[in-house]
Length: 58
View 1: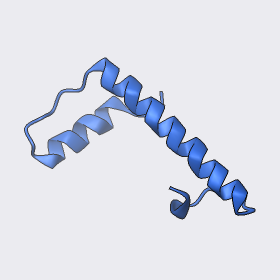
View 2 (view 1 turned 120 degrees about the vertical axis):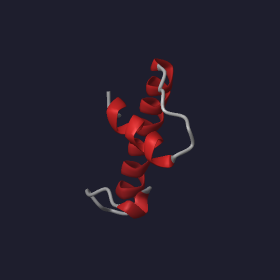
View 3 (view 1 turned 120 degrees about the horizontal axis):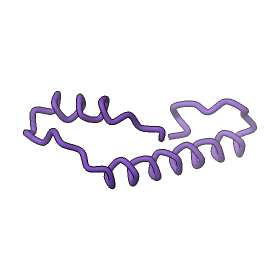
């Protein structure tokens, strides 16, 4: 698991939107997106001849 439930809940709380609960399937889907984001960023870094993933790769 890449994402941390307590950190997600803290972000939701800080947003003051009144949504503070997180379901298990949300965490699973978010993890899938985060993994894909990391892979895509790594591909961009490699395409640019770098071995370091940078913010601009996101």
